[in-house]
Length: 144
Image 1 (cartoon, helix red, strand yellow):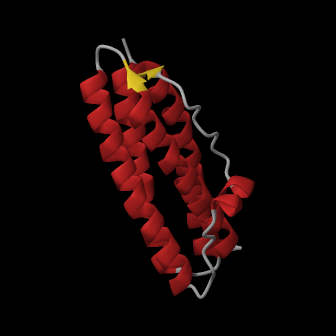
Image 2 (spheres, helix red, strand yellow; image 1 turned 180 degrees about the vertical axis):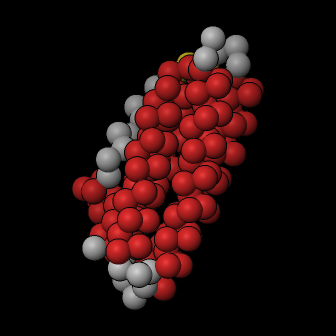
């Protein structure tokens, strides 16, 4: 069901948001400044996505999940540890997370198309483009 798919997506976005902030606070190494700024940009984007998905669930007459307990029970994304970490490892970790989010968006789009929820399908097109671009950029950064 589309509301369940959207709530899984919402759960993953919320845990990912906290993970990105954790990494933002704990990044270390010679590229600290660039990584610190990029992580803030990413978590600000995810914060907007959280609001957009929750409101979209409401538009569909569903109930968005709203507690960390709910999110942690559903998420497919592993939380970050509270420890200093080099940016290369951070970006390797979040690359995996962006792939999970990309798969979430694909699943929601498929459900939306099947249920003739075309506004939801169109919304997921935006996420498919955005996540694909971020994945490409992270892959370029990690390529030596």
